[in-house]
Image (cartoon, rainbow, N blue to C red; front, side, top):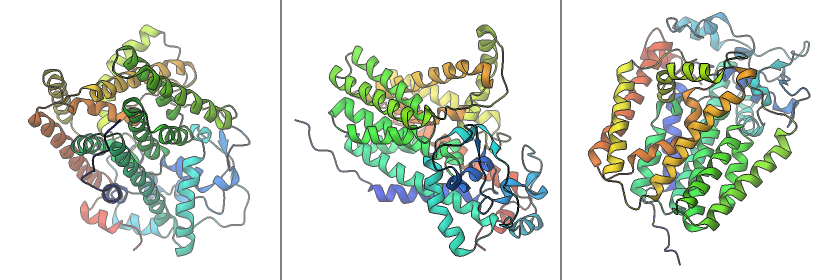
Length: 454
């Protein structure tokens, strides 16, 4: 008979509010569309009424002329000058001009279909953010500038709700509150996660859903409960991004590995494998069988495996940087010294994990195995699509399994844990400051001037 879960020191609603305020700060810190693929995701979210579930042409979506945001569809020069140009910034006059940009006239020819890889993503996230945002935008008569921030804040609200559910899942899985706080705090403080989670981007929801599935799977493996929550979270993740299918495959492998090593019961591992396989099959049946993913990156590559390995070894440092915080359209970040510091602190914490692991060590085994296998599977997926899409792997693609990296904190050397957490927090604050100076010629005064709803 299992003991009752320990009461969490912090209620889930407080966690949700704190996450929303934190992410809302990041959402308001930069101008519209200044996150990877944000224009495409915003236009797709604007237009879900025209393709409620599947697209007529699988790799294209139709734009809704009455709702599509003109800042994304026909980006004016004052905003367009920011993309991939880290030396350019907005002046107060630029902001004032962008605020007055009108919506497209309802009359006129239909807009041409929009062909991008995001067209093949499931509609789950887009429907949710559309339903939250459009009544506010139309009800208050907001312009395109303010409307982009409404979509961002709606995304922040969805993500905050999901991280509150992650907190509840930690409680259900009997992860001690101090451990849960350390793990969740470490993940949320990652600047790249905050940047993506505060943008109009399905990755924001996919990352939080990935964390929810990871914790729920741990509950199954250790307590035998939580199957319904795990299956529901995984189905939502799979219908948000294809990464949901990846995390399903990885967690099935993790369960098999841990059962083979005697860390968990084979019966419970079998249940995890069955859930991962069944939910993946369901997601494929209702979406991916009809609209397979399409990936676009550097373009098709004919590199052989040795050439691929050589190139990836040469770009390991870039992957490390882009995991922690290569922001904007991957055009600015922190000096290399920050990333060397993080690497050193992670290495120290790994050493502490082997020297004085927190007992019992099963959670560290679980999270560490998850991280290793997710990294490997991401390389394998890139190789699989190399001849179709080219090189696609960015460090941020590992964020759905970010809880796995937090295994390095599951030890008894408090000073090492605090040093790593402090470094990630400091990097977060540093990049907030860099974001303001990257986008606004007037610094913080310019950022305040650009705030929406004024």
